[in-house]
Structure formats: C-alpha cells, structure tokens
Image 1 (cartoon, helix red, strand yellow):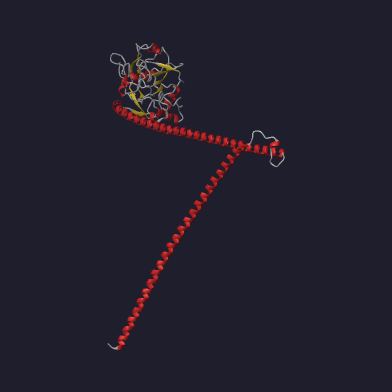
Image 2 (cartoon, rainbow, N blue to C red):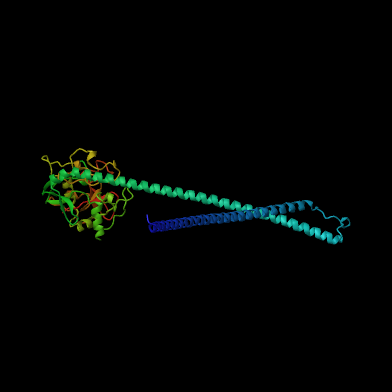
Length: 438
C-alpha cells in the first residue's frame, strides 16, 4: 500500500477515535448530571424530613415544658396550702404576753404583727375552704345536670321510639284493614252479581245509585202478632215505583255534602270506628247520624224522594202469598241470623249488600238490620184503622216521623218488616240512615 494511503487511513482512524472519545465523555457527563440531580433531590427530601422532625421535636418539647410548668404550679399551690395549714397549727391560740416576746421590736408591735399574720393566714385558709366547697358544689350541680339531661334524653328517645313504633303499627293496621275491606267488597260484589242479573238493577237519579223496580199491585200490610200500631192487618194497593237496592252510603251522601245540598253527619265516627264518614275505607257503608230532614234533603238532591211506609214495607215483604199472608222478614217467615246484620253480632254497621241471602222478593238488600231507615210518613199509632186502600202517604201532619227495618244491635223481633218505629225528624242517631225511592 502506498504511503499516502496509509497516512490517510491513520488520519481517519484518529478522527474516529477522537469522535468516540468525545461521545464517551458526553455520555459520562450526562450520567453524572443525572446522578447529581438524583442526589440533590434525595438530599432535599432528607433535609425536609429532618426539618419536620425538628419541628415536631420542638412542639413536643414546648408541650412538655408547658405541662411541667403546670405541674410545678400545681405543686407550688399544694405546698402553699400545706404551709398555710402548718402555719395555722403553729400559731398559738393565745398571744403570748409582752414580757415573753423578744423579736427586737416593742411588744406592742410584735403582738400586732403576729395577730395580723395569724388573721391573714386564717382568712386565707377559710377562703380556700370556701372555694373548695363552692367548687365541689358546682361539680355536684354539673353532675346532676348531666344526669337530668341524660334521663330526659332517654325519655325523649323512648317516647320518639314509641311514637314511631305506634305510628308504624297504626299504619300497618290501617293497611291491613284497607286490604280486608277491599277483599270484602270484592267478595260482596261477586255474591251480588247474580241478583243484579235476576232483578235487573239499574242506576238512576243524580246519585247514580242502583235501584230495583217494584211493580204495581196489592200486598198485605201490618201484623196481627205485632204491636198495636201494626194493626189492623189490611190490604194496600200501590202504583209501581223504584227503590234503592242499598241504603245510602257514606260516599254518596258525601257528594251531596260537597255539592252544598246536605249537612254533614252529626259525627264522623261509628259505634266502633273513630273515623267513619269521610274515610274511604268505609265509603260503601251506610251513612249514619242523619235526621229525617237530612235524609229528605239527600233524596231531593238525588232527584228522588223518601219512600212511604207502605212502599218500604212492600219492597221488604213482597206481594201477598196465595193465602193472603206476607213474609215476616225479607227472606221468609223464619229468622236467620246469617241473613242480616242484627242482634249486635257485629256491633256496628257493615258494608251494604253484605247479606245477599237476605234479599227481599224484589231484590232490595239490608232491609232487616244494619241501620234504621227514615221513611216519608208522619207517624200516627192508629193510622192503619183509617188508612186509604190505594197509595197511602201517612197522616198530613204530626210530631214524629216513621223509621223502618231495625239496626245492627236490634233483635229479630225488631227486624220484622211490619214493625214501625218513630222519632223526632231533627234527631240524628248512630243507628239512623236512609234509602230513596222514585
């Protein structure tokens, strides 16, 4: 190889060596810089930790110093109290005579100073005792207050817990009653369904209540075995008329009240229920606490009227039999407690239509028991003796109005269809309701 070429190769090798050396130096420099940064960061974190530790140490030392000072102060106070007590013990009960004192002062001055010191010490000790008693009494009062607060808190908590528990129990009870009422209403509706088809119930009047038609014809009115006002038994002929299937319910009467045409019942409760009228759970129960005037006003609002005594009795007993006798009860001549709400077995009103087996020959329900029902007539004991044969409407005047049907707490004799009852037309009773005719 020629010399110039060797020189050229040597130069290139030297250049490459220098470049490699420079790159190595740069790499080492970068590594050193990074390492230095890491060391600086570590040193900074260490220094921060040391500073924080010193601050915590100083804080703890300050707290310890303060606590030690408090202890020293308490100890000094205790020592002062002890010294005061010891001084009291050292002070003689009687001041020595002047000739026995040798304090480098005159006896009068010594006696005065000693007595003053003794009085100051006694006063200081008495003040300490008073302060201690005051503090003890205050602590006792605070302890008593804490006890009272705790007791009151416990009582309030128990009351609130009891109220919540009672509220929950009441809510659950009301829910259960509502469910039972709904189930009963469904069952009654199912039982009445065949009667609706058999007697062709129709909704009539402004109250849209179901009514049944009683065709024209004769029936036997009164009873030979009943009271004097049920005699004599006589035949009566009536035109055809409509009569409510059920007694007027709370829900229907409330519509009249809301329309401003009827007075609210005298009470919103029933015999066993504190909330009755206006409670949706009892919407389909008979309205009670209504007077004759209230009943008449309701029927007028509904576009109807109260039935006459004769109409009511025919709707309850049906037409006369072939022998001329009429039924004693809506279902027949024999009493059956399963066919009416009577004899106080329930002790209150029941859902209207609850006794479908007790339906009258025309399909009217609850005409025996549940509630007494106002009728249109004035009451007169001897009216039957002079009663018109066709469509009698009762006396033209009187003091009392008639009621029919008996109530939930009456016996079988009172629940007879022929029995007549009377009361003042303004009287409202827990047993008085109504139904309308048209």
